[in-house]
Image (cartoon, rainbow, N blue to C red; front, top):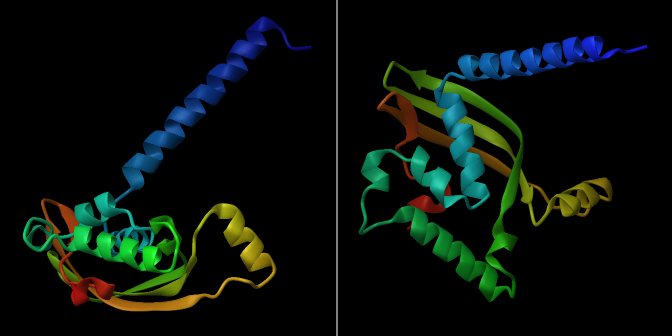
Length: 165
């Protein structure tokens, strides 16, 4: 039978374990070129402009005249509108991601990222589509050039269709 004292001990152990786990995860998280490439690619396909701009080097993200992220999001919204959908229809989920660092030194790296992308309207669509083979997957194979700025790896090439802007 659990008494009040035993419940307090069990509760304290659980709280300490959670705090320890969170602290170990945050300490173990090191910014690497491969991680930055995956994070940028996921943001690109999910149309997350804020995270995309955060992972672009200052040379690309601070050019207000070009505003490549804004123009890419606008172009995606226009494509969706032309097909009769909302902009969210153009979001894609990245899966089976693999990275390979082709060249690296302390401030510059070239990362090849491969995987599959599929339409990501909502989580139920993805589950049902995969279950009944209704979703068409598209291959992703891109090489990104990354540079280290302010201690953080950032994409400094125009990947995917950002190069078309």
